Length: 496
Ligand SMILES: [Zn+2]
Image (cartoon, rainbow, N blue to C red):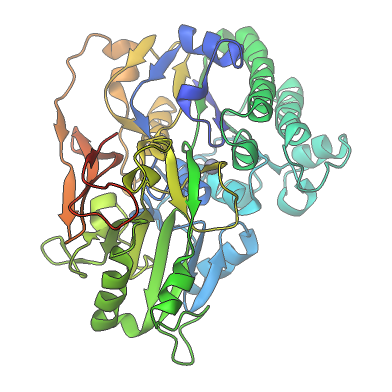
């Protein structure tokens, strides 16, 4: 048995439509749709790459954000050299075993072709590209591909435009590279193709803009080429084809600047914690803060200041004995599987705009970063950001729609089981047994609501969580406001 996994970066499953994505819709009909499939936290691409590669969450694999702060320095996970430098100082880039490492150890081949950021690509096939596996980062195969077959394939193509947006030629190159490889070589045990669209165009236009729809239709056409190949080879090679995404998208409704807010409140915000700075802020949809000497008094003051703001959603801090959060008024990092030596002292997700303006788009969220209003964004805990695509097809899987909770961390253990390879002890996901044809009709486990809430004088925040077979799935957030902050009516319960 073999697996081909196609990741559509940022594709929210409710964006599939017959007129825009006919190939994906046809594929969904002949395969098995994971109907309750979710991302990991934070729902950022490099974190998700590590989660897909290792079958574990940030608290175990250690890539705690796209950009984070470790050993007193900023780490930009888009840079593979930056990740390698971190790993050399901290005994490993990721602290979970990746599927590429398992395949390499057992003499199996992993083909990995991607157009996402260099760091995300490196994480997604960790252990493969370092050991001479057929790995191709389409922006620079010579620099990151040590495999002679891949170098030969890459040399046939003209150079891609730099930072192409939308990335139409770039995603086509991923599929061209794949089809070139399987035309001349044996189909590898595992292929991972990562298309950087529709994420790039969602960040440019939002989800429903005609330009974003156009790009999604082009993405679907590229998938159609893979589907055509699969129809011809699926039986002879027992190829299981998986269409997946790493996270979904919400919409930027309002911009905020957390560093400015804290600066105006009198805190000294800086890029490092040297020279008397109070706090380093790494913002996005999830805002991460590292505080001088991890001082509990200072952390409490900063959290009190932040949690009074209308854009504050729900906060997380270090997990103490008894699953108690270090900072009063937050949840422990462990509540969202985020407790790691590299985790920030305080993290919070920015809230929903509907919490302060009930008339606005329910998908609209607060955001701290450089993207403009109205475009797509992810990283937080809304159901829109957590919603991920998962469609399985092949003779190992049954058809239809699964209603049981599944997550992106479940893909690695499911694939490893199909390949007959051992599952590393660091894996937190599960074999999606109910997806298998051989298990059709087997009774489902009970889905338990294990949501957690935290309140302060302004609001109550709930992180919705499901437990299935002892595995935790993050489903979204709900906020209830106790009093108005003078910016609209926050007295009603906001539920999604
Ligand atoms: Zn992504």
